[in-house]
Length: 211
Image 1 (tube, rainbow, N blue to C red):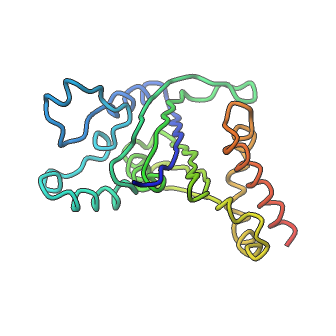
Image 2: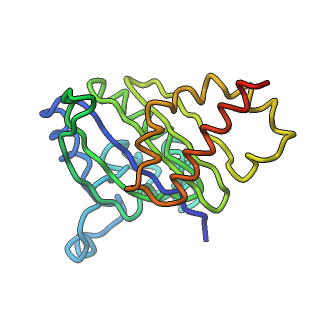
């Protein structure tokens, strides 16, 4: 039984491109039969629909499939509990591009390699991932655009360990990437764990600045 990483993926871009991406993201695992598909709703963020598993891998054994998934998606199985919503939001009184938001879980960690490949295929879109793995106690934010990724995280179970202060110094510039999203993470619409992680990120930055 794996630990589950909770993911909130926001895809930003032109309205028509978002609509096309959202449509193509829907699908089933490649090994599902027609009968199984008839009795089950498709996943709204199906990794296979966007970064397909090669046929020769699908026809192989389970170990080979999971190895391919880990190397190309960053996790086995793809997204679980996939759902999607769409909205146009305003920030600082300025309308930003259309956003498609997907909430889903992945085993053990975030799907960074998947985002890297998808963003390369969809260069007009920006992918922002807010992820949290509560059992291993790490929290992070990643961005992918045109095949390039930035991924920064903290292990919040270690945040009060003073022996980690040199690590905070090295992370300072990386954590600055998170600052534009701090207020969003800290607001009341997020759960207590996310709000605490946002506060811990601020504390890590402050600690780094004092060194």
